[in-house]
Every structure is written in C-alpha cells, then in structure tokens.
Length: 466
Image: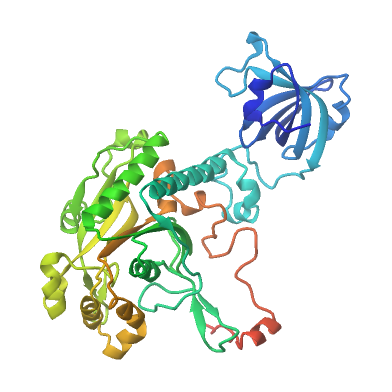
C-alpha cells in the first residue's frame, strides 16, 4: 500500500492507509494500546483495539522504533477531539504494525528540550538529539532560509559556482587547517577559510554575479558562537559600489525572513559608522531592540561601515582589520598609495549586525594592483613576499578586472538571530564539542603507520610541560 504522509491524513478520512514514521509515545492500557506516531510532516494518535491482530506486537513496540502502521483514518467525536493539537480531531484505528527498525532504551529523553543534556552525551548520539522537536525546527528553518536566499539570488541574475576545498595556505589570516600532499612530499594544501580570492577571480572571469553556499574552515579558538566550521552565503558582484551590495543584501534578507513570518524593527536597515557605534555602544556588535522587542523576537538589523583599514600588531607593525583586499574609502586612496597616516585610513568594509551578533561582512575590493601592493607594503611585506602571497591576484588584475565587491553572511549566525539560540551547536546538524571533537565519529585521531608513511610524515610526541 502506498505511504501516506501524516500531514495529509485529513484528506483520507474513512480510508485504510499506511503511514511510516517513529513511535513518540506508547501507552499500554491493557486491553488497548495507544500510540503517538510522527513523520516529517506531523504527528497523529493511533489506537490498537483489543481484537486487533496487531495487539500483541503493539505491546512489544518500543518508543522511537521506526514503523509502518496501517489502519483506518477516523474522525474523532467532538468530545474526544484534542483542541489546539494538529490532527487532534482524527485518529488512526490500527490493524497492522511492521517494525522497520527496533529502538533500544534511549540514552536521554528526546521528547523534552535537550539543551540541558551533557554536551558529550548529546553529540555522541547526535542522530537522536536531532529527532527532538527543537532541533528538527532549527535545522528545517536553516534549510528554508538558505532556499529562500538561493531563489532570490537566482532571480537577481546570480550564478551559483563552487570553489575548491583544497587551496593555498594563507598564514597572514586565521590559522589554517592543512592537508598533507601524498604526491608532493613535504608540501601541504589548506582548507579554505573563505572563498575570498576565488570569488574575486570569478569577477575577473566575467561572471559578474556569483554566489555560493560555502563551507569555511578556520582553526580558531572555539566559542559559543564560533566553531572550526561554518557555512556562509558568499556573494560577489561586478560593476558595483558599496550601496549596491548593501541594497541587494537588504532585499534578500528582508524578503526571506518576512516570508518566514518574522518582523524587522527598522527598514531600510540603519547605518552607522564604526566611530559612531564605538562611541554609542562601545563595540561594533550591538542590539538595537528594546526589552519588549526581545521578548517578541524582533529582528534589529543594522549596517556598520567606515572601519579603520589597519590596526597595530603587538610588535608595533600594521595588519588589516578585516580584509587586505578591501578598497579604502575614496578620500583615503591617496593616503594608502603614499602609505601616510596609516592609522587614519578608512576602508569600504561593511558589517551586517543583528540582535547583538555580527551576521555578515564584506567590502568593495581593491581591483587595481597598486592598491594591493601598497596594503601589503604597509603590513611589512617585501616585494618578493607580496608576489609569493598574491602574485596570482596581481597578474589577474592586469587583464581588465572590473570594479567589484561582495559579502559573506554566516548561515549559523542568521539562524541564531531567527531562533534566539546562543550556541552554534544548536543550529548545526553535526557540530564539534567545545574541546574540538566531532559529533558521533571519533575525530581527531591518530593516523595508521601506513598512512603516515604514504604522506611522508612523522609525528613527534607532545612536549611535556612542567
């Protein structure tokens, strides 16, 4: 018999159907057994009557077993209807049960909110944690937001393009995760911290409007809102100025979240300079909501722009604040080229802030080789070192590169804004623990001797402290 989704059962009242899903609740009342069964579309109550051929199997069916259930869909009498409950006015009179996957006793209760469960236990059994109502809602919400953003970008003439996962190490940024090369002994690839250079090269390649739902991997110190891996909606556009990128992103975010039923505090999004927010809030991440708006989960988006281009290093030199490929604001182009008043140079960097989180960041890029060279000189790179780092970019920019700019929006941060969650692990399917261990699987772990030999690697024991 063809499977019917639980969410469609009201269209089949009076019919005998088969549903497939999980047993959320089993109530054995001796002569009768009641079940709550759920699938991805909803839940329904079923009853096994005393004379049913399924009564003995019903008594042996454990909660969270996956099952195929057949029976007649019946309208419940008004006095027995469960008001406010989806499918509360119907029930399934069960005449057949097939246990597709029997469940053992659960290591923790998943019908309740699992946020308070020990992290290691939760993530070791993440597949069970994901069955909980909150995690189902969060992950499906994430999928819907990404889908809506993707559809918007396609409608705006963007092309979705994948960029490499094995790339060149960039030691001037965050720490890279590196991958040893078997074919080139002693040399390493790096996993991408972002597709930054590739998306700019796609602008040189004439695609004009690119996007990607990109994985970004950085060996950073772990925090509640930051992990080794995250996903970003990565966007780059040719022949644009700062306002064009910001306007496009506003339209995308506004259209997506309002279609999902959320309310935005202020449109267009307010814009602040970095100097203004530091004076007003003391930080470049801030929450514009009132206490009442926080309770209603209002979304308060805002832009921050005109950031300092450079900041001092502990050694007394200069490094970039956001991105070495950024264009300075027009009035500071000459200062950059002349390398004068470096601490006063402002960049075209813009950050999108929402409800106290930095949700995205981007800039108009320096598309002229002289500007890139000057930025690297300010940071103390010699001409040879600059060529080693970005010679391929300088070469590419000699072949008719268009003015361009873009942004990367953190998917996890966007979903944290929508859900009110404060930890990245609550909006990722398989996050890391705070100690950097993977969910379910046992990584990181040692390689075998054969693997080390193939990769021409030797592992030294860690140094003893004290």
